[in-house]
Length: 114
Length: 117
Image 1: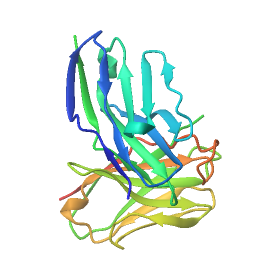
Image 2 (image 1 turned 30 degrees about the vertical axis):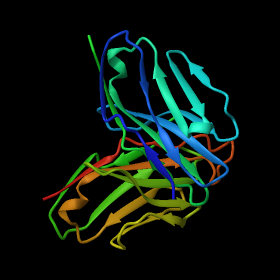
Image 3 (image 1 turned 120 degrees about the horizontal axis):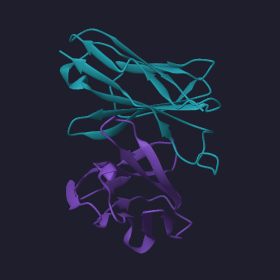
Image 4 (image 1 turned 180 degrees about the vertical axis):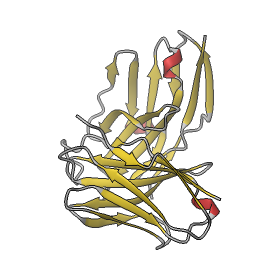
């Protein structure tokens, strides 16, 4: 069975601070896919990134960066110089195997204050 | 390009009634997925449709059903509504039905908030 753990339920930071959201996953699949989504108060899930298990290259996109470590089954997400607009719930998700199902973590509520 | 659209935005039903939720995928996307986001339970996979067929189903009772139309839009039906069915129902679509480079990531709609009273 697949499982995604986001141990941080809620994080509060002051604007311009860096923040890292943790994600640990479990799977028996040899090929799998990891995702991060952002859910603002409007409810829509906004796709941020997909990482394939066979590609361990880390990625940076503007203020966002992702650290994929297969050895520790982690796929952490860092926001540099956080902004109020980053306030949202962030979900890590795991896909793979059959059925095209995504298994989501329980999400981390990020609050960025002035 | 229009995103995934869901209707209605909000729906209030009485226990025992039926609810119908609708989803239009991004143009060209053939796969549609339904997820339930209930308070305290996170996002749970409900159904996956591709090319008009149900391909996978989550751990939900049979009163949760749906279909996909020839234009790839989809309907989710929930019969004999129960109070615990109150949730945000999210629809997503993807290009292709396999985990290949085209299926880069699901695109989600804004959801239908179903309230059962």
